[in-house]
Length: 360
Image (cartoon, rainbow, N blue to C red; front, side, top):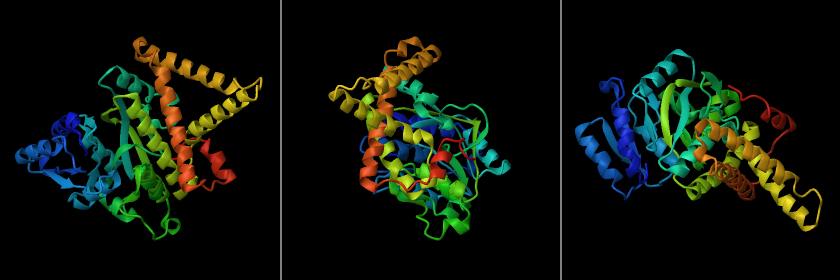
């Protein structure tokens, strides 16, 4: 949590409304130094509910917060909950039941995106579609299936311990990276676990963790029985910053785990490079400079009209801009990440596999 005053009450209230036995419940809120009154709100809740504890995260990045919570937790099962989200009354119970009965190493539900104003509701509509999210099934699939990553997640504490948790060198994508390791056999995984959550990934630590989960030999279950609602960014500017960071830190994950590549991760940087080449072609008066911009514009407008027909025609004017913001920001971030960490070492087999179905 960091300056989540508009959301933290709703988050805690939804968790407290869960039907899971309170004598088995422990809520750890890890704060990165909030200055907007969020800490005081949590402390007020903790006076009424002693099982709510406020912990400090002086490094102020997500994977460090996750590892602090993981280490401080006293239970056998860890259910991740973000302050920017509210949860169904059976959320915790469904996570625990599915984790204990399905053989999954990580379980999670569909990320139901919601907004609080016109532009954020358009953003929520856009990122809940294949055109906005690619084959990130946790954003829109409504059937139980094995996947490569889920939103948030729930694990046995023993699983997190075995894998060393989240990489703290990732600012995002930490859970996917962990799930990569979870699917990795120990003979392949080696002994140099970053543990617990990868501190070197301030972003993408979730994706990185999920990759480790899969490489460990574990499986990740996406179930619509696990329900929650995520509040998207409130403006295009905030959305652009978010997706630039996602793309930037995705490269770090791919350098660590080149075989985790998915086609959806190549599409935005390919678009950016294609548009740049179109600009160069136009400068040299090529007759074909318009092809890539025209194809993308047609795809964008088609996806926007389809989404508006389902979510409301009032969002039709905003959707093309939202889709373009997501794609271009992510693509620019990805290319900036290559400049920072270099090109991931992909084999031909990895590139072919990236265009196949997501591996469970």
